[in-house]
Image (tube, rainbow, N blue to C red):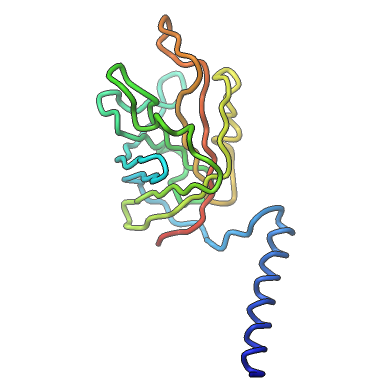
Length: 188
């Protein structure tokens, strides 16, 4: 009986130390260490029925992020000049809201809520899991570039698509939708 009590006290102490560490750091403690760089190959978000391959993207000549090709509405693009999902820093994945023929891969991205899970399969076989922290819709002229691409010491994920009103004259939407997520499990 005494051994069980010591064991229970030890577990309780470990939990309390974890909670104290979370408050000291300003948020929940993430036990996961960043993964090494590896190309993402598949994105799965069960809550909104996304199961999509991932392609590498770079920059357009004007310095903006390339869009995934419109000929595959189920394709997600990864900003390959930034962090890979699971590495320290924000990994940025983008997808279309729709195409001329109908909904696209991120058509339901606005339905994500805090605590929803996002799974990324990587070329090295690991499958990190991210938990949604927040979802934000912003006018394109006020795009939060620093929050989306800025440095971070921990592994984070950004999912980006269009939102708002569609302008047929320009062929663009008025807003951007950004989902912010943090690593919950390395899946290594």
